[in-house]
Length: 137
Image (cartoon, rainbow, N blue to C red; front, side):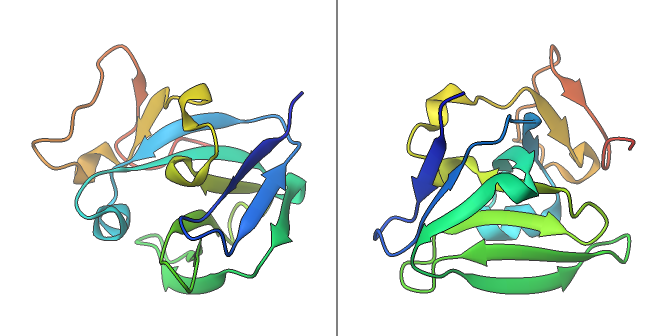
């Protein structure tokens, strides 16, 4: 499999993953809406151990999900580009923000999570899998 590569807008942070993608999805939770400016956040989920930073260093911001689970979001401290996110309940996976990928078109979202928080203008493709909250483990 080809490496998945990406980074931030200003080029200060670069990363790569040689892991097989687990899923590509759109998250409609309110936290993602805040971070995206109102839209859902698109993410490619890969095994956490496969993600390697190859240039620079990201900042990490921790919050608590509605479930009480600690959640982190990484971003470039120079330009603010969202890079990846994860949580302490699923340390084996990490969600790379599709907008930070070098080739985001290769990984279109195939499902939706947290549709219970979606705004009326968020399009949820009825042909794709959708969960009101997180998918079951």
